[in-house]
Amino acid sequence: MGTIDDHADVRTGDKGDTLILAVLARSEEAYQVLERALSPEAIATHYALPLSGPVVKRSLPGLNALVFTLPGALGGGVTGSPVLDGHGKALSYHLLSLPLSTPSRSDQ
Image 1 (cartoon, rainbow, N blue to C red):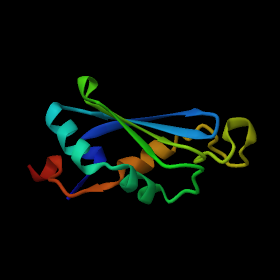
Image 2: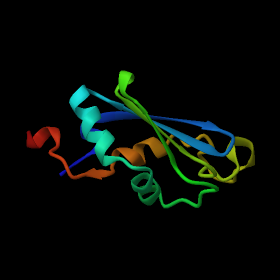
Image 3: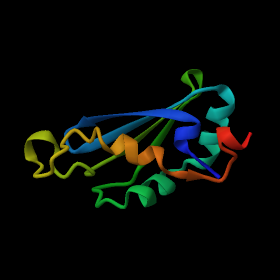
Image 4: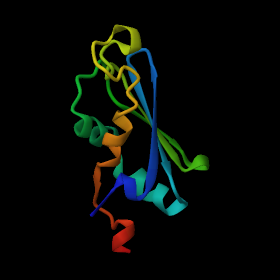
């Protein structure tokens, strides 16, 4: 069993207290695996953060990318959050560890 790190790179951004996660697949095949494996529910469960709304998934097949928005995940955003990482940059590394039920690069 592999992780997202075996198939993609992840970047994060923020808009207010909303965390934005971009999952950039390394190939068309990897994109297909991630498209099937990553649901809004899987992302919400993996992060287990208090959110102010549902996780939203946007598929960008022309870019082999998925974008997830997690409203309220940053607890007030850059200026309103007491946490050290108000932009949520470290949260991209957490997503890379999400297990997938597909072979990893080392298993292939």
